Length: 148
Image 1 (tube, helix red, strand yellow):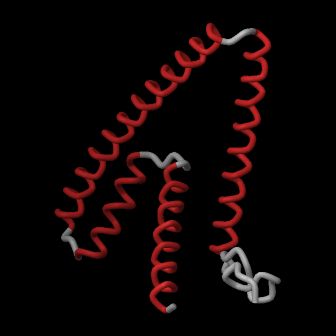
Image 2 (image 1 turned 135 degrees about the vertical axis):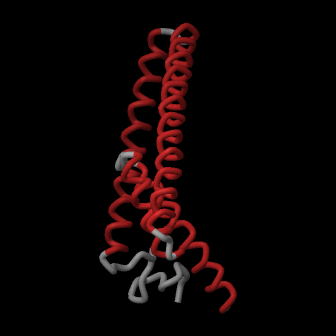
């Protein structure tokens, strides 16, 4: 039982860190901010000299700018692929099917947005110190989702 709890805890922490990283990237941090943040963390942990701090910052800035450029290329590529797929689907489908397909896409977009909002609310609650488990000790199913 203890091993199961430990594995569950490790898995949960891994997921939380992944969500936190993904959440940070959506805030559109500039390459300069990203380089500064990364450099400060390293300077603190590695006790870097002023010269090393400058060098690390420059390296991190170059890397951050390169990543941003790569992401822009990827976004453009993905948009073109999406548009090409949509054009091909419109050729294949009848007008009635196209209408249903557009409705399906819209409902999926809404559902995806709701799921993201739910994830965001759960993260906010967790950061505030609220319960992040599905069940609680007082719920009918018990803390771990099983019956009592």
